[in-house]
Image (cartoon, rainbow, N blue to C red; front, side):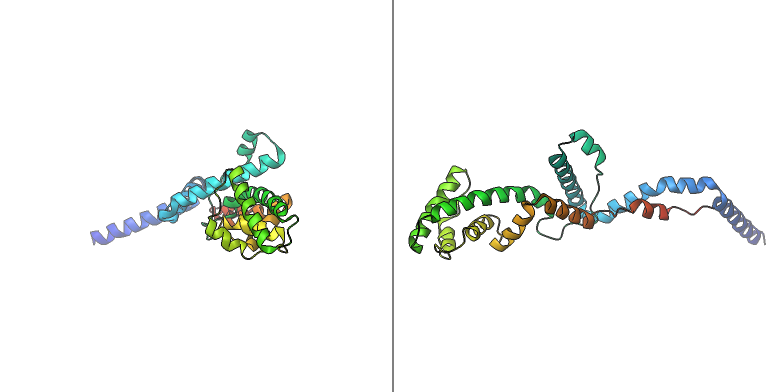
Length: 232
């Protein structure tokens, strides 16, 4: 009998405490203050063994975002860094290289393409025989690599590439193939990327698209607010 009364008293005390906790406004304030940290801890553990990759991509993308703003506006670096949010991507890039990893190389690719294009046009000038054109082009490309301190395309691979060309082949196609070879890409892929690299608006749009898909939505604050405990 005493044990039953003791159990009943404990249940009553617990229910009474629960009701008081539920009605106490300080509890809501405490949860609201603790929720962001709890979500952060959950996210860290959710990353599992891939935590270093998430952080690495966040660092890289932050650098690229700030670089893009400074390059376009020439604003003070400290101000740009202060205003730009540092975020962790929602997921790791599934592609071989995320867009932000390619941005710098896109500009370098465009510059190299323009240089190679001039070399090809020079090698093509006055050529009417395919064999002579290929020989002249090979010499010019090797000279170009030497002058620019670039690693030349191996002779066997270069010969294989040049067999596809004659004096009627478009210089742009040859330049795209040459630049693409060094990046393990097709000339067609290089052509598409050059369209982006040459147009600042396309570059900015592509960067925004990548960041929009990889990071928190613009209404994240509203989403976070919806997780807060309701007003009692």
